[in-house]
Length: 203
Image (cartoon, rainbow, N blue to C red; front, side, top):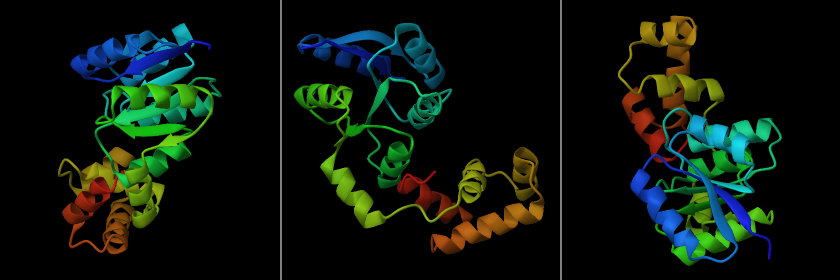
């Protein structure tokens, strides 16, 4: 059995150390590098050429989905397994679109994680069944990329002029995108639209 060389990326040091210790007990798996941010993950993948990257979604300086998409765009041979607390249906679709081969939750057992690592390294898809069912019920995001971008920019309470300046759009375009997102999500206002989109992992 060939050893699967793994990069482990998560911004929580305690979680990384715990997973690394658990994986040491698993035959055929070796953690060759670690990272706390998306940028570090890309650098470590370039330096160590692992077979598989185990990525969290929410990390600073490039989240797990951005990291996976970057690897896909550059044709990297390293496969990606997402292991996250955030079981949101929209995240799953975005992960698949980014070339991710596996998506499981952090409450999985050590044996389940090891199984997912081995199978993903072989090129098989491993998806948490509960999340897959939720994704089927929820359906794809109704938002366009521009609507997601504008809605995401409202998260800090930014005004329309501030969002327009940030995204280099006209104020009218910003207002139209916000209104369109609100309508598509059947939301009461932009705060409600942001809540709905975030809850479903569409941002």
